[in-house]
Figure (tube, rainbow, N blue to C red):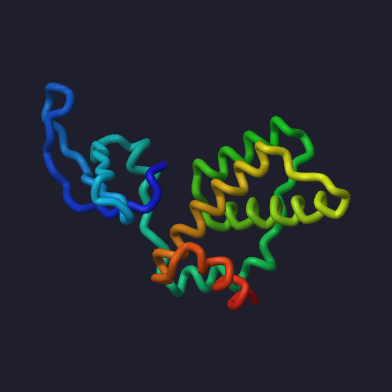
Length: 154
């Protein structure tokens, strides 16, 4: 995962002794981070997607309360499912993952307990993915995303 990148060009390059066509990606927060993705690499290209518009972000936020939960008691199965959600990057599933782990953390805190470190890591990954994209689409700082969501949630 690279985060949010902009396709700046499609060029032929020779990295392996054979010329191949590549998407040239630049990270939005750093001109130094440049990534080369072969245009014929279906696995890599399938992970690239367009960024949400402000309207799409607002639509996602408006349905956050109605999104379900995805808690799985079995640690191994939960890790597999959360890993799949992060890999697939489906925004609805990421929202469900964040909501589930946020509520679980809140529930555990009542009895002085904490989320398992694996769950906390998945929560952080999911928040970073979603909030970075929301910040970009809304043209706000990432630190303002939670407040924006709280002010616009249905």
